[in-house]
Image (cartoon, rainbow, N blue to C red; front, side, top):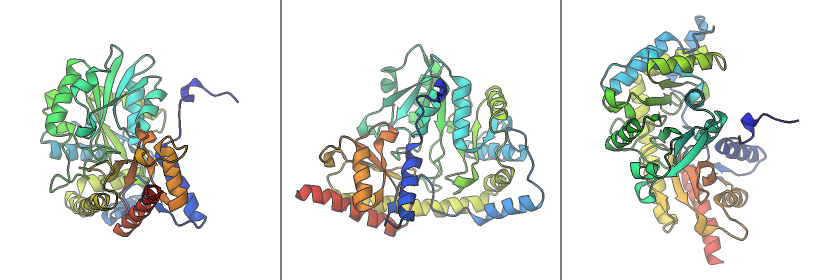
Length: 400
């Protein structure tokens, strides 16, 4: 059977593939420590789940407008306005079936054949493939490792061309844990505006940040309104509210752009599941309960961040790594431990899984297969167990 050129370069999500394999091995009875998953290990807060149950009981089970329930779009706009300090037009909000849908809407609507999109790397595995689905070309760009790979205009100038249409940023970053400061965002926004490029800022991990008491990282909408007219923000409920399976994401853009996203979405997934939208209304509008839940999870992630850093320094003292400022990942380099025919972190991670039963995601999924990503969205005991196993394999090579 022949397939369309639309998918000839498409690859399955590497992060999902690793997690699926780890779960399969565990189901077979293997002793597996799975630190590959990109989701909080907390249950959805009860005040959110209860709202969904009540919504179902009261008949909120029918279609909604493709862009989402107006009450939810207004709640998200109020949420964005509260944290940015200005009024946000709710008609610029489009609710989607997870952030992947919001990203697809953006890439498919804003670029096409012959266009290029700059993707700051290391990147979340899905960005380049979604650009390819839009028949455009992803152009990866790395910042300096000494700057946690964050890009600056001089990095972008090396790869920008007449075909460039936009720039993708992720802050806090999956997989590195790096966070762009407000000044860094200001500089990048000005660079993009000068070249008439759009910026897509993925801020799904914004409420997993270790540099503020409220766990809220700097965001692109913190800049003055006139500086972000070229911005598409994508975010959602998955990470902040432990709602990964509910599939609630959203984009915020100009109303004109939002209308294009809505028209596209109306022909693909239509509306996000209605009970999920009802739950999200409670998440975004019940500020007191939401803040309490975010703070509780944020405190746990901060403790775990400090734990993984301490374990790296104690058990793997010579291994380069990036100290996470946000998200819940540790990104470290393993090419110094390759054996035999191993030429990349993918092979190293496979050996780690087979020999030690630890599942990590190889850096090839993020643009550099010398590195690996470890998720510390797990209990302290599991994290400590995993590090002991990793150290055991590394030490075995050192002894040999």
